[in-house]
Image 1: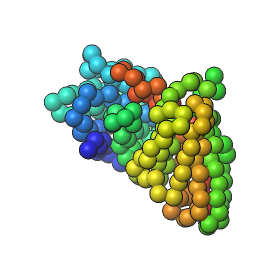
Image 2: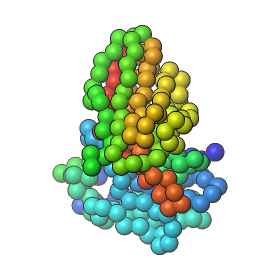
Image 3: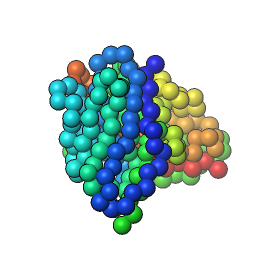
Image 4: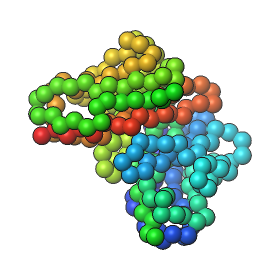
Length: 112
Length: 114
């Protein structure tokens, strides 16, 4: 069965620190991978997505993610976080029948 | 476009009461989904629909029902509310194709059952 695992439940960083959030997936077919962000009190918004081609994907607000097929990973990175990046981040992989399988989420707290 | 809209934003129910959470989208998406979000648990799929008249169970369907009479609307019904259904509910929609699984989310409904 498809699954997504996010290694960190809660990450606390100071502003300007670098960020890397881990995501591993299991899926036997062609993967489409996503990172969504949920700012406090808001709904999920797409940060970036990978369908095919260049495994390094750039998204909004300076985020990027790298698809490493051999490691079944799709880690999210940002070189320098800001206080406004405080949010919960969800990794997702396509499942059967148009569904998305979400990870448990990683809560990021950025201290000013 | 309004995107995906949900009503109400907040609701408090007593145990055993019923209610319908409304969801509508104006993007002509064929797929629609209902999720619940609980702290530390990510999003769990309750029901989904691949088009008008077609619905199917997700991971956690017990205690819920759905219908899809039009492309635009996908209401979620709770028949006998239980405290375990206290959660935040998100509706989403998408166009599913060879290179498109992106889902668009509504603002959510925060439901408390006491």
